[in-house]
Length: 459
Image (cartoon, rainbow, N blue to C red; front, side):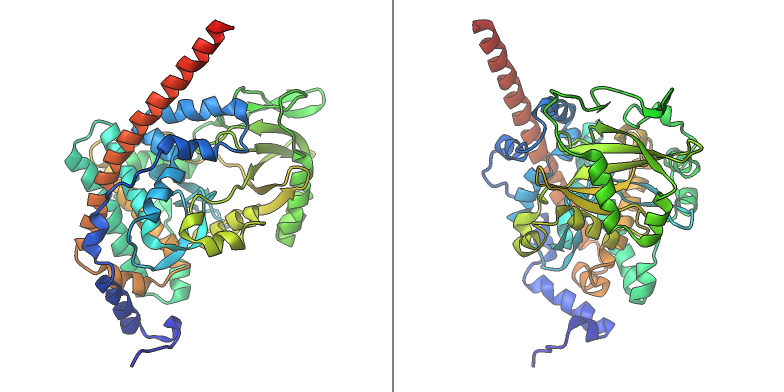
């Protein structure tokens, strides 16, 4: 007789068995397969340009042209379409939505500890199969390794390590109570001791925050004026809006309206600061061209606080969970905040959301920090990438365990390396597809440039 009790009323062995049962419908070995469907990657990218600032799109495409890995970072919509056609065991979790290796970084907990966690949730969505995030994470390691000239064997190994660390950490979390699993943390001060020297040194730098902000041209810098503190212009990445730039939204008003979605204690904290200046800021790879701004807040003693307000557009995973996408259609900023609060071990105090009524655009606000790895190149010394792959796999397992049942997922994955091997095989197949997509993108971009030049010559 079929057991109709809610899953949370079942004991561990029953939930583990329920996950294992899913293998009958979607064998773990089948996750290794990837037969590309016919689609036009450039058309998918062009569709995501709608509503972006047209003058900034060349920056987006220049960044994506730089390498196959840079292309993958900006091509979340393409991969989402590919993943929608693949078999999945049907074990849902809150998804990050854009889970590649550069969307992890350091954050400061409310207790003052530096944690390592996922740090980008623009595409987050609930009720997405757990393999979606893990496939993108593993593929990102394969693509990045091949991009750096590593062998197929090394690239596959990095992808496999990410999957193995995910599986093993999920198993350890499954043996904890839900409250204990919820409190799981990846503390950088503790994990750095067991890592390769190069990676450990970089992560300790994040813990100590010793790197001056002036080394990062994409982080706002201050300048003093007779009228007080001011955000220094760094065009084309950071600049003040002016008449004629074609970008219109009430930045100060949006910061003010976000206060209604913040916790009362955070509102009390913010009362000690005044908004001194605002500027438009170009962000990320996939987000270039979306509406994003920074606000410089300061105390009477000129102690600064940077907040960022960022446009929240519909998730690229909408096709994988239409019901969830519909639920958040009129609350995209809240969707991002909700997903971040569910998945992160310690959430940003300043997370809030709002909407610009004049344009109909949705936004979320967060604390603007400067604690992240600078580039993939910093990871490529002997075994450093392998350690980083394992670290990211652990973090993703912890994030998924907060919304999914670890016992059920572990029952599906099992205790052998069958699941890890399947994820690694998929990663290599997808890396090859990404290389083809990148080449097609470069040809499309070159042709567009030639057409523009010929058009200019005939005028």
